[in-house]
Length: 446
Ligand code: NDP
Image (cartoon, helix red, strand yellow):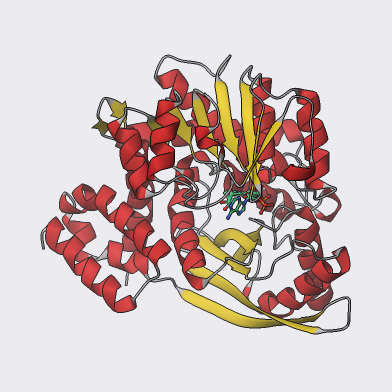
């Protein structure tokens, strides 16, 4: 079978599966990157590894029923997609957001398999979540929802089976409630979730890991192009876990952070955000759960309903909010604003067309499956800490994180072609992850 046939066959079998638009776009993108690898390796064609990677091991879908503060009954949908455990226990976050659909989770679980493979840690890929919206809910409502969610999920997970973590809308508070319920139901305190509060077996450094890892990856991209992070203007979107810690490390490395955002708009710091402003904002977002529009940090300008991309000049952009938040026109605006390096802190924030624009304009592009892999890699350190009944120091975790990110950068370089004079990290990451998954699938037999 030729590569064209393989990819064509793939398209027709995917059509039969009828994937949603997000999963489809993730599949198509990877198919394009890895076609030459399949073409050059008869064993991958014979074992039909790519097709076997497309269909998740299983999809678990369930009802979540809980009682709100007024005594009313609420009903949500819950999912866990166990995509592939060929490299280790299913591993990937839980997302609580009203926009969550099965399509969102299919795409995230699939991407997670490649990302986890790149980390070099023994972890498979999965994802889960609910269309529950934590925004505006009281702590007690969030707790009752998490407990109801775990009442169903507990029977599907285990420290060697499936180890969920946080994602959008699921931070330390939610993980604490979920793990508490798991412990009550099962009597086990086996570390089955990662991103846990420290008192429940969490890892020092896990909160910072994804944002820090993204900055480390961006810095490696810059260094490879004989540049540094020092003095660069860095545009960041989002103001959640990934964005805030990306901002922290960027500032520490001498960069000027010129924007953050949330779903209500963007805040711009033309002269760069100070560490004091960041500290204040972190408290405001993470503890008080405030909205950017109501925050008035010294010298910060709020732009309602706007993404940051066309609002300010920058050298580096780190999209850290959500998928498809950088579209074609945003990519063009970023290039016009002087951006030379984009690294995805979020999962697939840049659309396929946006990536094409970056390549056409000679902008370096680091895909999420490489640039934001620091979170899941560090989650794996948390699993090791729990399994060995030991306590890691923050330095141990962050030093190891840095090593993993630099190794991922090297793997991308090893597999990446050049595209319009710049390294094509997107293709490098897809190929690097695919080869590991494909070889393990073959080793496992049919
Ligand atoms: P948080 O919930 O902590 O923060 C998400 C941020 O993105 C918030 O500022 C939120 O604003 C904003 N946001 C969410 N949806 C939208 C939207 N539709 N439009 C505009 N802004 C939006 O999530 P995380 O920081 O944990 O995750 C951010 C991204 O990083 C996600 O893509 C996630 O999958 C990815 N990621 C996270 C990892 C982690 O360790 N946390 C690991 C790897 C990837 P608002 O509050 O207004 O909704």
